[in-house]
Every structure is written in C-alpha cells, then in structure tokens.
Image (cartoon, rainbow, N blue to C red; front, side, top):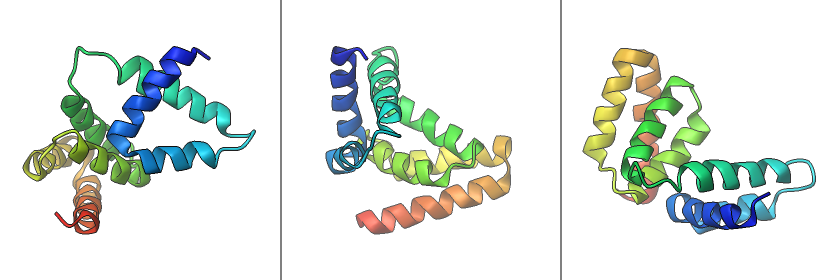
Length: 125
C-alpha cells in the first residue's frame, strides 16, 4: 500500500462522503475486508478522485449515472449525499436521472428518483 496515496484518498473520501461514514467503515473493518477498504481508499479515492482533470462535481454526476446503470441503490444513496457535498444541485441531479431513463431504462431512473427523494428528506432539503 502506498501510504501517501492512502492518506490523500482518505482525505478525499471523508470530504465527499463524510468523515463519520468513512471512519465507521474503516473502524468496523476486520482482517477479511480491511484489504478492500485499503484498496478503495488508495485507488478509488486517492489515485482517481485525487486527479485534477475533472472537478469533483463532474465526477459525482458521472458516478450517479453509473450507479443507476449498475443498479447499485446502496452506493447510489451514498453518492447522492456525496454529490450534494460536491455542489450538485437537485436540478442537476434530476437531469442526470432523466438522462439515465433514456440510456439505462425507466425503471432504473424511477428507483434513482425514489432514492434521491429519500435522501433529500433525510437531509431536510
């Protein structure tokens, strides 16, 4: 593991997803899944999210669309929160999900809208 890349990834991950969520994920990891936590933090959040060629807001919008396409509601809810932290507006999120209706299917978009509304309610927005 590249310690510097891990630390950079940990910083990015906390800023986007929230320190409470990230710290809980790492603290609750055991011998079985700690290597996955290290991989995700170092490579996803350090090596890729740490690149400057795309701003976080755009990365979040891409993630939302991909998570809808992959039918990953748990990760979608997490990244809806992250997208809000990265400045994605409800209107922009709506447009991303409308776009997914065309390319990923209407049922996938319906689920995305439902998940987003639930997160908005939880956050009071």
